[in-house]
Image (cartoon, rainbow, N blue to C red; front, side, top):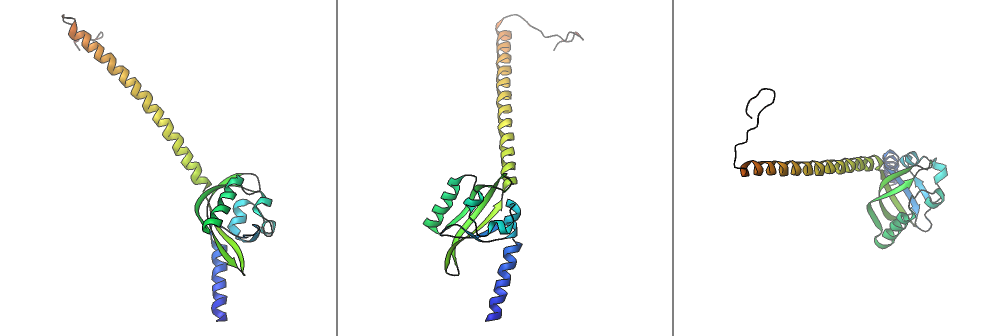
Amino acid sequence: SRQALRQSELRYQATFETCLDAITINRLSDGTYIDVNQAMVDVLGFKRDEVIGRTSLELNIWADPADRQHLVGALQRDSACRNQEFRFRKKSGELMWGLMSATVMELDDVPCMLAVTRDITDIKAAQYEIERHRFKLEQLVQERTVELQEANRKLFDTQFAMESVGIAIHWVNADTGRFL
């Protein structure tokens, strides 16, 4: 019915605009943006009218053009691309990481790509920091292991010398005169 169709459209629109992830719909033939949600323009720093009717290449959004080719190849081959990490360039020139899933769909009989991209820049930065700290800790453990091995070698040499001399050797605390 007409009312059911209208309610479905309203649900779609509410979902599209409420989603915290960037959602884009592009024509497959040339990559032109047909629709984008507010999260997309917010994260990349564009105004909606700067995006609609243009392509990602015109907007210089892809930090690495090979990533775009990877996406296009996956869509041509599988009609979908799931959970792929790509770097994007914001309007300001700042780079960001996005986790993208995309699928081919038809909109008014026109083949399109629906893409949902989550900003994972903070997650990638945290992963980098964890990796940096892990590397530093591994270096410290290696250094301490070498120091411990050297101390054990000296202790072994001292013990061997004390057991091998054939005379009594005593360690004495210089301050108290007590045997150690």
